[in-house]
Length: 218
Image (cartoon, rainbow, N blue to C red):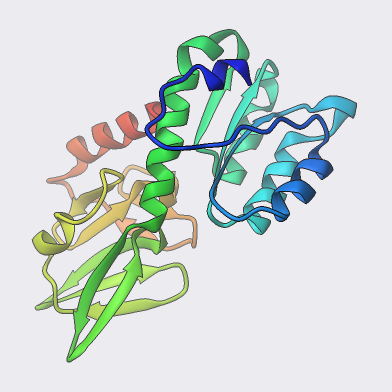
């Protein structure tokens, strides 16, 4: 907690520390606002930090969590909970500020909205809900987790409003890297199991951009 309080963060915040995961969830349930949770993978009393993160994701939709740990053998388990960042404890001083800044950026991204037009209607969509964007003839399809919106805006108009986690991977597709579950030679498989093709013209540059994105995740 002392390390966090010494950081320069461009917003007001309150720091609370908990040794018990159940107490943390109960206390935060009484509060309104946005949360950045910094969680050890193995908590005191051998509580499981990864299971706690799953509860956090369900209860606090406007929240981000960061893992810190000395247990590298559990690292592969953490990505099922969509963490913002992973910090290996011996590197805490080096990486904490970067992790917090990224968490703040992601919280802001969750609130960002884009106004689209469909016929005479306006559709407002949270950027965080967008998985991919597809171009078909004169229209764009905004693919969210379980719903698709057909809008008038073209790729360039949409792309200019999107955060850096969105990249074009095909003449007809833009993908949200934050929703990617698997990257193969020719496709992205997203968290909702949709398949986004990677064209030959974009293959090298999109692979490089995705690797840079992943390097910033840890």
